[in-house]
Length: 576
Image (cartoon, rainbow, N blue to C red; front, side, top):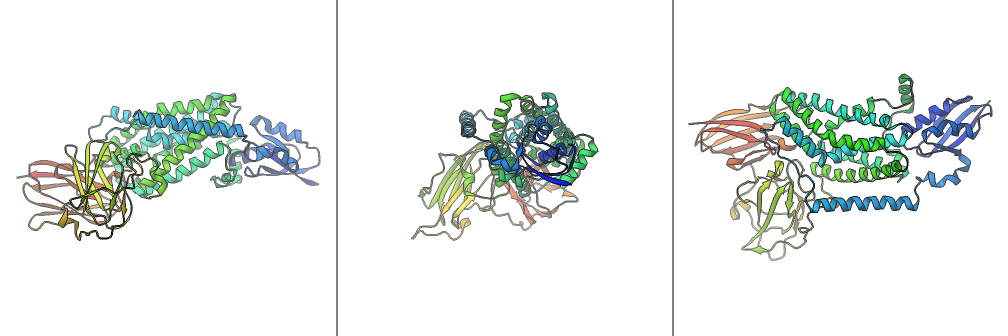
């Protein structure tokens, strides 16, 4: 005759714990069926006979760090059921948070955080390796490092009795999968063009989803918000049991971290994405494979050291490390959400909290001579100031010093204001426009790597203000695409999934106005979304359909159209 026993199992954190506990209890004599929920902590056990005691369940689960009590007595374990945190635990979490924010603020104040390296067509593989080293200590740490830290910490917490080397193996598989994936897919991207890329908005949305997963994992490590356990992705328990049966053991296999590491290719930080676009422009599988291999190897020292601390942490240090890891994972998750929102061009009020504090003024710029003048400097990827307040209906003259701009920061892009401008490295660049509607208009580089929260706030026009009818009449320079020039030389180009940029080379005549009609049939991601010809002050943000590029070549030789990161997209051979 079967009977049902109800147990309270504490210290379960995820669906993997459910499977592990079920298998341990199922191995006990007389057990017919087991159902475990890590969300509620309840284990329902169907048994034959009444010989099993609470001690039998404790003996089966104690080696894996689980504790057991009768479900009817769970009120005595209320603390564990709500996450196991005491006021001292919360104080420690708060202290870690304040410490990390203080360190970040200090490093930022003294400019000790790496800003990035320029990506161009003259890079050696050694230089790409150096970019990987820098990336692993900056933006990529928020994406790959956050995922790796959460995976390592969760594995550490689930299997506390393994030795350091056993717990370090999954992180080795993660990094091995990353290197293999970057090499193979780098070669594929180099050979097959944009087949393996997402649009800028797609990359942003994917980054947001990955960040949410990191935040959920971080809260689980901190034993906060137990209800979030319901949000964790999971495979059916029946399938998980079959996998364990197939492997012949109940431990974690190498395939999961290996696959997760491989998939980080599709969760790129700014550096990764920039190199992917560079590889796209080369059209060479070998160059693509070697470039991404060098980059992934450059990220290994930082990621492996991060993994090593997690794997070899033991005892009370392990407890404190898991708490520290949880805070870090939550912070980088929130930080990376902001980057995803910038890439996806989604504006929320709270995303501007880290804009330069000296520039977030609600006072509009003064109107002098009928014009509002805004001045901004770009240092690396940073805008200073990064926020302006202007009045609607009054011309704005935006003066930008880009002599120290790096990479994609050489281009200022605001789709909502229809501004796309290449910033000269030799002189102040002026962008002129008339804001028509009140609102908050963000701007960034095409890759979303510049100061987060950068924006122009437009206030409603004041009564009595004489509105300008046409910006081109009053100020001159606008950002609309140039129109075909009558009597000049006209060419056509197509951008498609099948052929990429085709044709991508044109022989043109010196001194004759040139017009290139570009039929864009696919959304272009990241830096490929804008083409610039710096020496002729040409900036063309691509939109689906016909885009027009116009200029007059004034000297013979080769002129390149580049993406915002400096990679060559097309060329013009100028002859007499």
